[in-house]
Length: 220
Image (cartoon, rainbow, N blue to C red; front, side, top):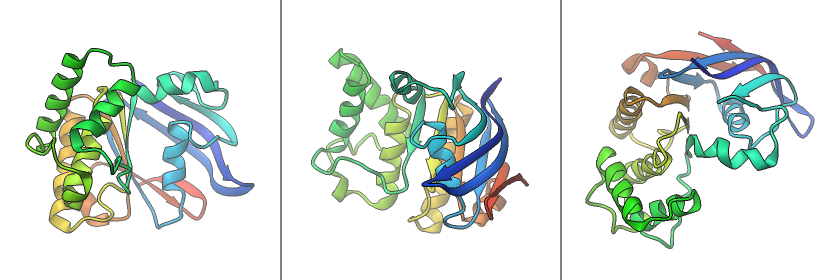
C-alpha cells in the first residue's frame, strides 16, 4: 500500500527552487534513505510530507491527504500519524525524559494517566532507555538524546517515521546503533524515511536510496 505518492512535484522556498520534478512512491513497511549534500533539499522534502512546507506544484499524497490542498484543520490528524526525528533533538530542556514524553501524549489526546504511564514505559523499553526516565536532557549523551527523540516519535505508533539526519552529530558506533533502532521500528510496521549524508551507513545497512542534488531528485 502506498503511503507517500509524489508526482511531478516542485518545491520552492521564498521563490527559490529547492527541488523540481520529484517522483516518489513509498509503500508500507519500507526503509528509504534520502541522500545528498547539505542544502540539497532533503530536509525540505521531508517538511512537505508533514505540511511544514507547502508544495509549489504537482501532485502529492501522504497517508491519503492531498498535500497541495490540505486544510490547516487537517494537519494535526496527519501529524499524529507521522513520527518526526529532528537532528537537533528539540527536547524540552526544563523537563525530564518522562515529562517530555508525557507532554506529547497529553497534547495528542491521551487523557488517562495510567495509559500514558504504560505507553511511556513501553517506548522507553523499546529504545533501550527504560532506566533514564528521570534524567534531564542535558544529563544524556547525544546518542541517548536521539533515542529519546525516537521514543517520542513512536509514542502514537505512527504509520511513517521521518528522520532528518538522525546520525548527523553522532560518532560512528552510536550512529550505527541509531540506524539499527530505526530498522527495528520498521520491522514492527512503521515506514521509515531517513535523510543522511553518511554514505557509509548505506553500505552497512543497505536499503532503497534516493538522491537530492542540483535541484533534482532521482532514485539510485
